[in-house]
Image (cartoon, one colour):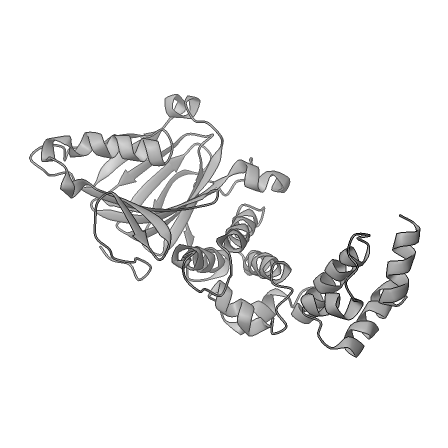
Length: 338
């Protein structure tokens, strides 16, 4: 079972690669008679209370492997094992701590997911589903399987009011629509290494973009082109907000960061403010916030340049158009009223 997203490495224990602590649990390193119990312990400790059941527990028939790449509040993982049923029922829910959404992309094999809201759904390679640890769910894997699983704590989506979404437990393709946005950000986030140079300078930026994408997925519209554009726009806007200092910030740069085409980014902004307008508005708002700071005495041109607006005349025109006064007058007025 292979995936183009996987980074192959030696098995067992902790592995350090490019400055990232990668935790690998490989059951082939354990005695055959102990493997299933180790598996039960690993998935409960690393994820959420779960009860696995399988007929392949004797004579070394059971095997499994988990690779984890912790990053902030997002627990990135790829799991692979043999056929089994995994329950997160009322008993397990009662022992669950903070609520977490799990976004699971099926990389190999088939999973029949059962939830109280969506019933039974088959998830095949190239599809994903979302489950909520505060609600019961059951996974039934029909033979060998591999899954990429990311967690999003409820607290990270608190402002979205999504705890009663009807999207839980459904399957969705990753080749188009909202699924493409989810897969793209998950791929970029999986490949992120704090010790490597990536299009995004910090995993926190990618993590926030992932949360924004999941929020869009869990919205009222399920799997439509409009929903996909919304999630792409949310992720792109998060990237813009955290890279205002880059004078070369462009559609192409953002598209590379999100692993989508420039055309997709353009389309995501086609129903509202354009990409260029969003960049300009965020830069002007950030500059204005600095100008209001009485403890900041830097020159206005320098402040503008630090936020990516290196052309002084273009900045002056844009600032005056937005705030109906010059940046110098804006600073003076703000400090007089402070």
